[in-house]
Amino acid sequence: MIVKEINYGTGNRVGDTIYINRDLKKYAGLYEAVLAHEMRHTGGFKLKDMSLDLVNEDLKPLKREWLKFLLRHPRAWVNFLPVMRLEGQWTFDISLLIFWKLVLITLVLGWILI
Image 1 (cartoon, rainbow, N blue to C red):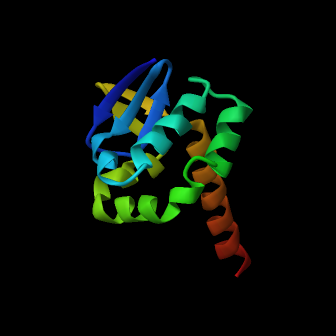
Image 2: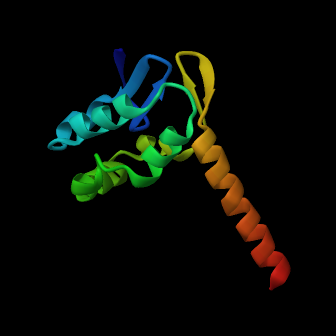
């Protein structure tokens, strides 16, 4: 497993490489929790990966620190987009693609039904 520090997003695993924001070290235990979470992922896309992101047991006890991190580091919000550029290559997060598709469908249906 290779761990590479970046200056945007929070954490992401692509294959055998974990990309993690170096600024997470400024928040007690957050770097380790995000790293542990990313290590649990399979490196591909399986149902296990989606459930890990939905439940996210590693970050539950550090929710307040994670929210502080997100508010103080706007570049971390990139992680909520379904598409990200890492080392010159585009990566797609299937979980987030599904999530944003459901949000869009809900908004469109809500607008039509009103």
